[in-house]
Structure formats: structure tokens, C-alpha cells
Length: 245
Ligand SMILES: C[S@@+](CC[C@H](N)C(=O)[O-])C[C@H]1O[C@@H](n2cnc3c(N)ncnc32)[C@H](O)[C@@H]1O
Image (cartoon, rainbow, N blue to C red; front, side, top):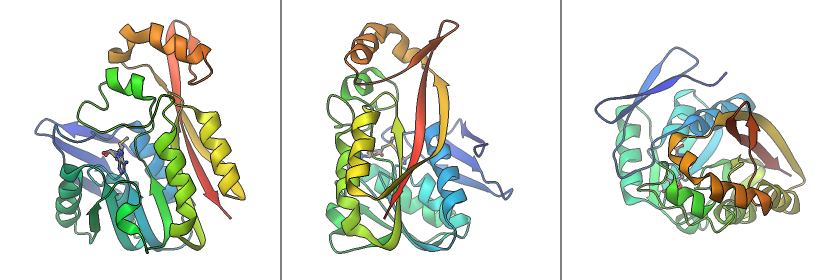
């Protein structure tokens, strides 16, 4: 069961936590609007973190995942970064308005965290095949330079994470089936001893992608993405993985 969330009309995002508390986040048309993947990732990490630790929310958008983990009392320190300046500013603002401390940095992947290591890295950098992201509503004003098969940024995070994880640290990342899940998991298995699937959720194809079924079909036939057709509905998935040594 994921935390319930809804958007308020004045570009606020409202997240109800499992402890009954509600967090309010300011957002804008210039940044990524949190989705079901956001809350699925949050719930997966919350359920896995046994002891408090330092957390990096990489690809933080408006800061929902990291700030919520801090609100659950799971962060000894919270760091967050994104390639979008607007996202970093909103993350700082949202941390203050939700009574949480954050070190937020503008950063392409780990560039702003060169000598820093964390107990938990929660990755949510853009991970949808670029051609699909370009015609979707998700990435209208959000960078998604994830390559033809959508795996480029996530694989880079996986590859670089070991330098930024403390001993015993864990990496969490979502894999969208509208990207090359096989490639991403193969990279995770090359870099980490243990890779496990924590949660998976299926979603119907959003309306803005329905006119682009020819593109999706072609990419599925190429083995790049995957989705199923059930009773006339096209179903894609988000899977949340944890990797550690
Ligand atoms: C799918 S959104 C997730 C945002 C947030 N975690 C959420 O759930 O609302 C992906 C985020 O990754 C950021 N991003 C894209 N490319 C990036 C890069 N090279 N380095 C860091 N962040 C990046 C985008 O700006 C965007 O905010």
C-alpha cells in the first residue's frame, strides 16, 4: 500500500504519511510533478531502512522522497540534488516549510558529491526511454537525457554509487518498464553482490502516450521496453530495487 497523495490546485503537492502526518510541497510547472513511482519508491525505502543513517536523494525533484524519509525520522542527515536549478530551490524551500534540514545541491548525477559518502542513496534520476519521455506528459520541463533505451542515467548512478556508499550502505532505485530493465539490472548485478526487487506496481498507459502506440510497439519488438496488453489496456510497471554488498 503506497502513501496516498494528491495535487492541490495551486501547484502544491500533498503527501499523507503512514503516521497520519501530512506534508505539503510547493511545486511548479518547471519541475517534475511527483507520480506513483515517487510514493512507491518512498514506501519501499521506508520499509527497508532498519536504522537511521545519512541519506542522499539524487534526482530529488521537489524533494518529496528525502524530506518524507526525514519526516519519518530515518535520516541522521539529508542531502539532495538534481540537475534542475528550480528543483533544488524548491527542495530547499520544501525542507524548511516541512521543518527539516537539507543540504541541497545543483548537480549532474554525483558531480557535486565528489568526496561524500552516505548510508543510503535513493536514486530517482530520469529513467524513461528518451523517445517516449519526449512525447509523454511526465518530462515536459524535466531533463531526461537517458539515452535511446532509457537506461543511461540509472546505469551511471549504479556504477558510481559504490564510491558514495559507506560500508554496509544501500542503493535504492526504481526501474520503469518503459526503459531497458534487463540492461539496468545486469549493470546492478555487475556492481553489487546483492540486488533485490522490493516492490512492483502496474499502471495503465497514460492518455498522452496512447497516440504513440506505434513507437511503443516498435521499441517493445526491439526488446528495449516492456508492457502488456490486458483486456484492451496497455500496462507498464515500476519496480523498486535495492542493491548492496
Ligand atoms: C522522474 S523525476 C523524479 C523527481 C522526484 N524524485 C520525484 O519523484 O518527484 C527525475 C529527476 O531527475 C532529474 N535529473 C535528470 N537528469 C539528471 C542528472 N543527469 N543528474 C541529476 N538529476 C537529473 C530531473 O531533473 C528530475 O527532477
